Amino acid sequence: MQTSNTGQQLALQLGDNCLILAQRISEWCGHGPILEQDIALTNIALDLLGQTRMYYAYHLKDDPAGRSEDDIAYFRDVHQFKNVQIVEYPNKDWAYTIARQFFFDTWHYLYCGELKKSSDPQIVAIAEKAFKEITYHQRFSSEWMLRLGDGTTVSHQKIQEAIEDLWTFTGELVTPNAVDLAAAQEGIAPDFEQLRPRFEQKIKDVLTTATLSIPTNTWMQKGGKDGRHTEHLGFILAEMQHIQRAYPGNIW
Image (cartoon, rainbow, N blue to C red):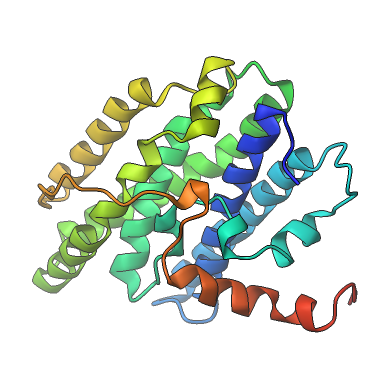
């Protein structure tokens, strides 16, 4: 059931971004390259999960079906999720995880900074609470891009490969769908036409400093925000949802 409130529709998209990325990052728990980074990624995943709950709570405000946050996290199917496709991409290795995080964090930092000026008071409240966390996330992933890009020959090669493979997913971050356009028109969220140059410049600045090449491919994937996803999301949901679907309503 879809709410008619644009802010609540936007909250679902943003909450789905955070939930799926949190689930993906949490796969590193106990498997990080060193203990400090293992804990750092786990904390980032928890931050994103907290942001998910705030967005979902707003999306479900006055929900006529009386749904809970768990209902929309655990009982929707692939096509009902509205996240961007890049957050679905597998970890593969540390370089892919960092590159994926860097692209998302750069967008998230710029976007959330603009959400603090939103005409929707609830969106403002969420953005102001989340912004400090997002600022840390952006600094963390940017610093790692510099360490890998300007590090050893092997680290440079691995992060460059990850950038090349993930590049086609970056366009969707700054390409609006109908909800984004409506949110911009109502002053709830920023105009992507104004956000895109800042995003592209920030990406360019970090990659250049890290001695990394900027891909020249201009074709971009899209559709995640409208329910069209990669094959990876189904596997994420199967793992994330199977306990609740097997034992619906159980509480531990």
